[in-house]
Image (cartoon, rainbow, N blue to C red):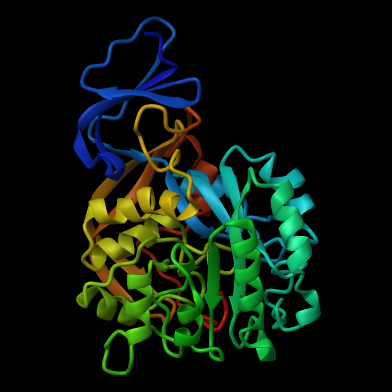
Length: 403
């Protein structure tokens, strides 16, 4: 068969098929066409030797901000995708119903990297990041009716609803924005992602309202509003939410991930469902850097390679209810990420400026996007130069009351 592309002899890790073996992966017409040993090709097929490298389904980053030029948070999705090996970025609430049309026309439709969105229930989205003005401080900015209308008109790219609650996101509005967002999600049959920062409201108050399939991001955040108490014990409401089917997402960001919390959670056997970067203008130069660095931190904390890949492929696609993503099964969307797992001594930093040293790091070496070899790490030296080295860490004091 004349495939468009064959990746030859890589270590294929595909959690959707419980697969970890040296195999070829073939693509045709934007889809995964075949997976197996020594796939035959004919003239016209592009072949890429990936022996010695890891091939995974295209990585998904479930929490990003890529409305570049439209909000103060936005970064360039394509540069980030190249640096991180991410083929699908999920923008979580940068745009609301009042400015989603511009986000779609000027960013989403022009991007080679796939961009899905969670619509912010606040009319203007996260417009004032850095100005200490939370988008949900003023209830008049929330628009349930308009949110539903925009979702119905853009279901091909809107995969869920986003709300931010906490001292800095919703001020004295408390839980009212969350309750409105839950109504919107219920009306549109979409999952909700909830952000929390400093209380009020408390972690328990927020997570107790979430339903099966809803997502709590910043789930491993530091004190205050951590999922653990002062003795490192997981709060009862957190365990109850997991039993109920609530999903727990990392959403690292500038101020929402602590090694102390992660160690306690993992010691108790509570792994995140999804690992996401919460990459934005305030976190890209540290402490986040990129998605592969975020995944590498969890390798350092004791999760296995297959577990961290699962959290950024199969589980992320499942959270979005998009089974065609995050898989290399024939017929799936033709995305793949090529990685190396390097051995050495690497420093990692969290939002509290704690630094830990690990012996492994994941590095993106190439991307297949919609069945085409889109980019290799070596092809984009400019993006690599802009990307802070994984082994370095910022000494800049984190303003950890933000995203």
